[in-house]
Length: 414
Ligand code: BGC
Picture 1 (tube, rainbow, N blue to C red):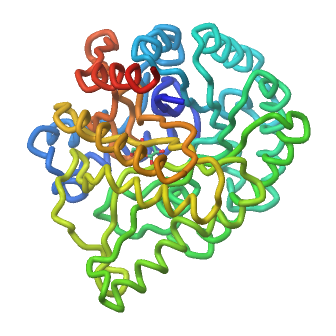
Picture 2 (picture 1 turned 90 degrees about the vertical axis):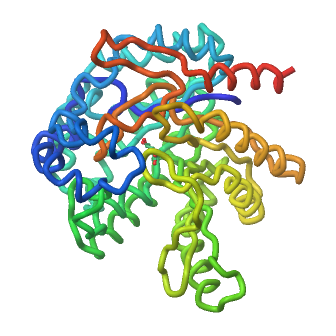
């Protein structure tokens, strides 16, 4: 599968979930503290004005994908992609506890149908960090007893759409969600997310409950639809030692690899049909858990760009689990579109190397199809294969790198 990836809250528009509440409560503060939080990113000179405007931190109409999805699927087709990853918004389907919104349920039915009509395989993601406000008010995933609500939602998805799908992702990046929402302390960082709880015990509870949530979802879905291929999309880092011969560098690297990359996947291994991974960066460790600058180029959001770092993760994930792998997200924030083509090219090389060694890669999903709302960073980061001009009627423009990607896929699929 060659595809692109999106998430409801980031593209749909007019969402009402725990993130939109947080956005309106925090936009002014995020704008005021922008320089302190993101003044270091390479794009700062160009994005300063935007980043200091509270409006940047409001998802609002997003890119109106909820209404324009057919036009967007035509773009998917135009880019020669044969698959598409999207997320269902729980807050639309069950806006109040126990009340199912038939219109929203119908919307996603049509949505899946329109993908199929174009010969595009839909990859449905059940939860991409956002959920109804009422669920958050009950304590969200922090309370084990709340899992029954998630189960009811999964049951609904299973009944409504299960037979029309082949692939399901239950949870997107539970590791990032738990870490950024429940432990990250650094006020100067853009990694402080709702509910901004700084409590390791809460973090552990959320992380543990997400494992449970996944297992339950897996059981519910498989029982009714044994044909479904189910997994998660975990954020995997290419974690390396600055000096592979240094005892401390080497030890912290090993520990971090285990805790960040493999711990969750090991817990759910009997409940996953494929290993789903999102890859964005390499982290080099110097002495005890100190991250260090590898001197690589930085993307607009200040992440080291090492697309080839996907290769070691693919090989390791294969060695650990021997299950098919889907690269559920991978991409680069690059408003000028100067690195994206190189990034995709290197990524394909990394996948080809892994494939040649027997790693079973089933799909690659570029993040993202469209420019979209980049969570606590807001609107300025541009991850899209397709640019969206929100000031001018949400106009979509295919970037040059995307045209290249489309040709490359065609060539590789011959
Ligand atoms: C998330 C996306 C996000 C992307 C770029 C991934 O961790 O799943 O929602 O937009 O990274 O930051």
